[in-house]
Length: 178
Image 1 (tube, rainbow, N blue to C red):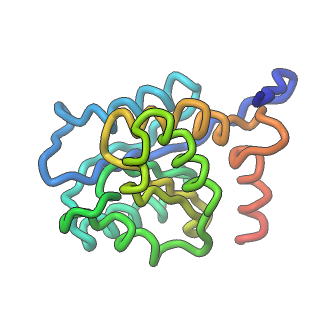
Image 2: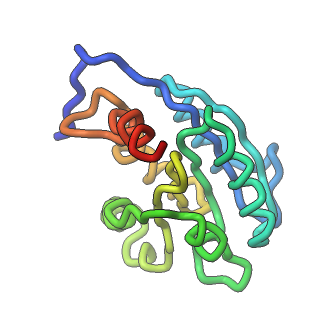
Image 3: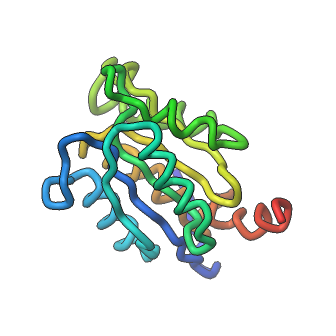
């Protein structure tokens, strides 16, 4: 069972949410809305939220702008991680990463297996470090975003989570990256 040490100080993260879709608008984007609501309810700061078309250049342009913003520590993307010809998120994001977080994909698929069964194999969800920030790329369905947040990202982003969390490691990582 995950352990939260309530005696430790909570460190709110600056998080941006990017929906990658050719069809969604802010009004119809239930996946991005779920992530924005969940992160704010957890006490983090929603620094920005946007939607871009599933075009490699458009995705990279938005990500690079956010990576240049020191108040954004985490970027969550939703959409474009499948196998349709328009799913370009991995191709757009992976070249920006210094390191991949292989464990995220593994635990996301383990959790997703419980809700969608073997269909989880059709997801190319992944995460990694780009500059001083971390990017987490999850499928575009609201259910997949729920799977990614509940019990995974919510704990990984909580500085009180033991034995470790990204939130607790970010200050140390920034010193190394500087």
